[in-house]
Length: 132
Image 1 (cartoon, rainbow, N blue to C red):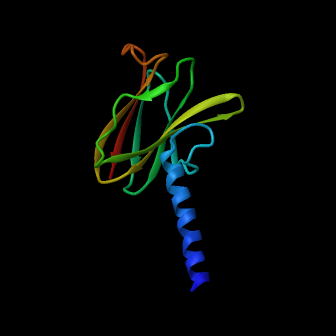
Image 2: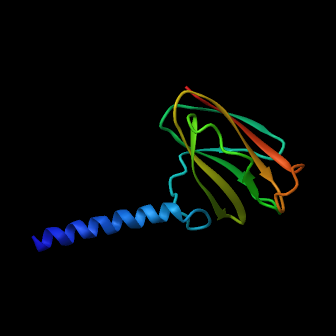
Image 3: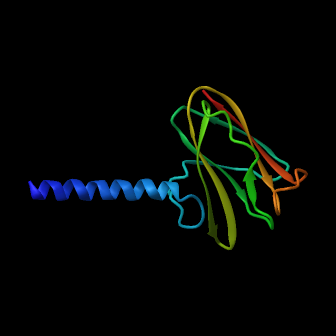
């Protein structure tokens, strides 16, 4: 009985660690290692994204001097937000906004490039998401 209790405690500790890692958010060494289908965008561009339900995907933009943020979350029935991550590879920093495709429908995600995110006139990258 003692061995079973220790085994259950070990499994719960691993699950709790994974859950807490998912809550800690973004940044290098963030909780998300599977970006799914990566779709690259850029300021001033609109990208069409077609997905099937249950598919993980990431909207990726190369960092500039001010960073990127979501203007607003998309309709959660179409795509649910998981996390914001960034990775540096080859001297370039890329920001990933990670989502799961949910149910058939359409949504638009706008990312804003900004220094302090107070100015709404900054660059925009737009992604039109269609889940079929």
